[in-house]
Amino acid sequence: MKTKFLITSLLLILLTSCSSDNDNNTDDGNEVPTEFMPLKNSNFWTYNVDSDISSSINPLTRDSIYVSGDTLINSVTYKKIKSLTIPTGFFSSTLRNNGIKIDGSKLLMTGNFSFDFGLTSPINLGVTDFIFFKENATVGQVLSTASGTINQTVQTYPLTIDYTLKSVYNGSQATYVFPNGDDYNDIRKTKIILNLKITTVQTLSGVTFPITIMNAQDVIVSDQFYSKNVGMIYANTVLNYQLNSIPNVTLPIPSTFSQTQTESINSFLIN
Image 1 (cartoon, rainbow, N blue to C red):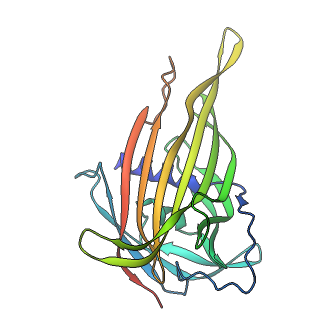
Image 2 (image 1 turned 60 degrees about the vertical axis):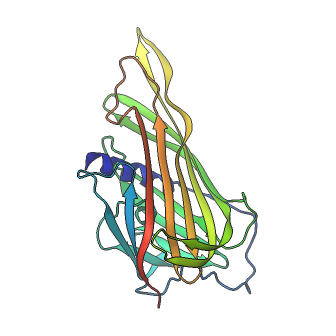
Image 3 (image 1 turned 90 degrees about the vertical axis):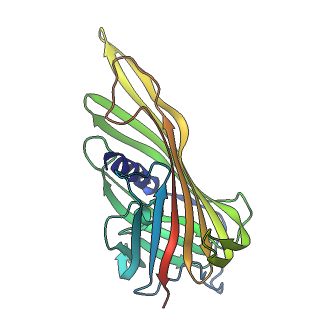
């Protein structure tokens, strides 16, 4: 379970930006609101979560999220997403306890996070109106970007974590068919990418010098498929990173890791 906890913690960092830069297209006030994630109260979705390291220690799981009602954030009304239990899947984990709203053809997320990065103490950050879905755009168009720096001391090492998070429109397709034959129509695809770089400093003989623990790399790449009048139906998320080998520096996380996780819709209710 330690590995699964670490993965969920790492995935949650994806949405922990203090501000975001969105696409420059302003939705017209007369635009029909997107129906790719209906947000009426009591709507729910359940997902079967699987990974390429699932085992008796990290078994298959099922996540459940639902629209609990309205929540007011900075005088703006959002729909709050809750879960029945702590989710293990990337998509459900990032939506849990956050505010979602429809803005024309876009889905925006705002919320606060307090989570464990698998290091020492929780990290507290937030995201404001991050566009994680847009119904129509040019393939490859960046919908939102967020970048910043997280500072945290782990053991005796002061870590500086530079991050860049972005969402990208990844096209559309007529139908998505699951292996069991279930099919969903009118598909839009979004890609979420998190790039991280981790550095620290060491002092030897009174001289302080920087050390790069992890070169800038795409730590998380999540491909998400949305179906009209349903919501997110399938996500394929790859977590992959490699730390540099630094003499006399040992962190409480694996030096290298790779995992592919899938979230497949199991059931849903749209009011």
